Length: 577
Image (tube, rainbow, N blue to C red; front, side):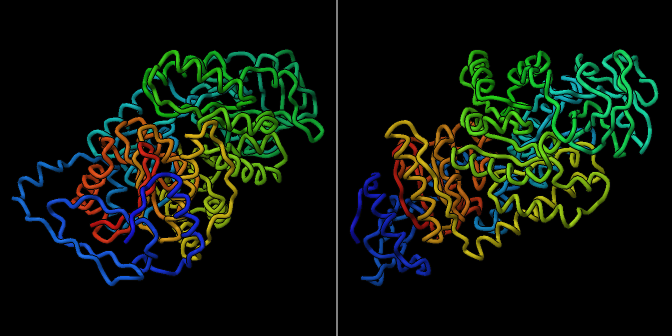
């Protein structure tokens, strides 16, 4: 069998040959002009047979085996992965692992250690803390519990902090957990600060210009339309409203004003994206070392750039990622620039649906998912995925169909909000997301629905362009060869994200020496992040990785692996010995 030096030009020619080859051929009939690269034989490897079209087999005689104790010293067990993922790999194999990531908002229903562990066991990849609710001391306690869970129980849950933003919000309802607004009731919305408890049917508003901006006849839409009022009278700082769509009012719920079928922006549009409270919360997040900061109601790319420079000046070397929340009408005017400037995006369908006509929300969601993939940014779809499960133990069939459609569109992650923060059935809601994601992904693989999205070049240098082409080729090669996994050794996570962008059908095993990079990769679709120290010697890295993963039952002899490295910028195709 001929040998090809695995540099980028050779790899590209290999891919074009593979792309023309029939997909139905098994690996033991791969044409002999394709590079099949084996690592050096370790002491424990016996003969391995590699078949091709021209010869029946090639035999590699085994060296004399040394004592077992020497083997253990040569390959110490030093690889870390989330314990739930490890259990899935052992039980079902790599091809059956879930690709879509799951984000859970932590609230009163899930803030204790046992509840957090139950969510982690159920598949939670990222724990979200919402700075609209609770004190910083409360959030600090949650962060400490998640960290302790990771350290003591073997999980790798990342932490996302979500800012409140400067849009109009209700107050905290005088400490009450919620309040029910009934049809026809008159409620007072006031810019005054009420003493606790609030007067009956009264709520405070955080925007001083609220009473001046509204007019009699305007609609006040609460929490994306969960409750709706009509303004009937204005008295100084107070606005009297009649409830026309009854529902549950929650503390600090978002408010939107509509007049004659259009959103009222006026002074609200001039509010800063990041409020003074948000800046204090951001300082808190930096100090606590959160992995992601989600910025609410982003209106322009400049906000993200300014925040990134602020974080860089205060936390040098920190891998903290910025997620832009697409949830207001101003975001849509600058959508591509905002996504390009950020490290990821979140489609906040609830608040977005209060600012644009409801029938436009699905198109915005799909466009945002496509843009994020083209620009190589992870995207989360959030809000009301399983809203009924806040009160009921099973979802509606429409909600299940919605979740399946989001997965089919290629979103990186799904997010639970009230379902996990304050719902009666947070673990069951998470189980529904997990099972629907798995089934939808499996259907796509069984139907061999190859992705046809055009992925434009996004790099600014020849080096980054080469990395992009290698990862696109590796993803397609993995699909053509029906590989069991793609291995990538990455120090920054960039090559792993490029592979995720290519959406191979098999999982991506991303090996990184940095814990913060491992946690950030928890948001990338199809990526299983491992913590592993490695060197520039790829042969040694592969031998060691194979030994460690086989010893823990996560791969087996005969598995077909496509190997990519951002160290050497190369592709190799290897059968596990």
